[in-house]
Amino acid sequence: MDLTTLITFIVYLLGMLAIGLIMYYRTNNLSDYVLGGRDLGPGVAALSAGASDMSGWLLLGLPGAIYASGMSEAWMGIGLAVGAYLNWQFVAKRLRVYTEVSNNSITIPDYFENRFKDNSHILRVISAIVILLFFTFYTSSGMVAGAKLFEASFGLQYETALWIGAVVVVSYTLLGGFLAVAWTDFIQGILMFLALIVVPIVALDQMGGWNQAVQAVGEINPSHLNMVEGVGIMAIISSLAWGLGYFGQPHIIVRFMALRSAKDVPKAKFIGTAWMILGLYGAIFTGFVGLAFISTQEVPILSEFGIQVVNENGLQMLADPEKIFIAFSQILFHPVVAGILLAAILSAIMSTVDSQLLVSSSAVAEDFYKAIFRKKATGKELVWVGRIATVIIAIVALIIAMNPDSSVLDLVSYAWAGFGAAFGPIIILSLFWKRITRNGALAGIIVGAITVIVWGDFLSGGIFDLYEIVPGFILNMIVTVIVSLIDKPNPDLEADFDETVEKMKE
Image (tube, rainbow, N blue to C red):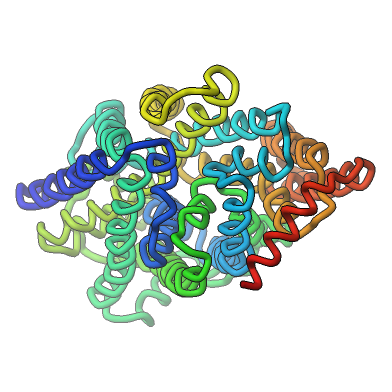
């Protein structure tokens, strides 16, 4: 790697750590640590939500999927764009108001407990267990993405690269909590957006234009140009169903809770949706143009960057398609720009991992430690419990990520389905259906989470070849409604619901 590229990259890392250190002195209690004192503006909230949502998957996983399988993988991007918009449109404002009405709830398990007046704490504990289970896998996907970046960029061994990436992210999350995460995500969101717009445009210019890229891909495999050819209805439904996951992702919807006012939602929705759509387009075209570029252009030897190239049917191809963005950064750009683009990849990874670690640590501090063991714990004490939990969760995720053949997309897919199926229907029903009860919500969360685990690990393939979020989401919704209708209604829940509706009108 060029020394200039390395220096640029290091300056970026030091900048992120500096933000963490600054926010350390603004973090005085658990509310500051996990929700930033509910003081995020619309721009920071929108880009922070987008950056924490997309992760290394946007710059590594999705371009890699398009590179390997063609435009049939773009259905996933459509599903995500629609899901993100609907989440902002219907969930954001009402959740911001309802969490304040529900005893100023600061975490998703906290909201569930207060929303359903659950004095037994069982709903809080089960929700926290689901968060810790699936976020461990989700965080692991970020660790894998970070390791691939450091491995390909610096020629490091996979295990060494894994530890370096983990230490950087854990450090500033540990220091500054939510404020550090939100502001670093804001900067990282801008960087990711610019990188995804610039890279495919420069690559197309090098190739001679869009027509040349389409022709090259068509000669490699004509089906790569078609979104429906060779793709079954189950595959299309599975890809579009990624959009269902948004309603249950704790690290995304916590941004809605952190907005300074529900009145900021329309502006945040516009910024977040525009960022999402353009970013997804950039990722799709990076993979598409990458396939054409690598197979047809004279490129430097990529092995010096840890990027292995193989010969398939007389064509030069990347052995690991998820490294196409990294390859472009090294081939096309000046060392300074290359360093910035590598920082953009790390931004995508860090912006999600830090959010996941933060939500997981808040589950330990607020939903286990305080709720069960020390109800009178001080704010400072809970912050330190959260910080210790951050380190422990990161270590477990590192252990899972130790396999160098791990796929970023596979790990993300499993965790995304888990949250979408376990929490998504409960979030929607709790906000829009007065009649939902505590027992209904509890049954739904358990059924949704178990369905994802059983379907993904034991039933996938054949007639069950459907993304596990679909059966998990549907069964959760059905069970929640049935149990709630059988259960006795709680007048106190209906009073809070009515208060939220009135505040929405105001």
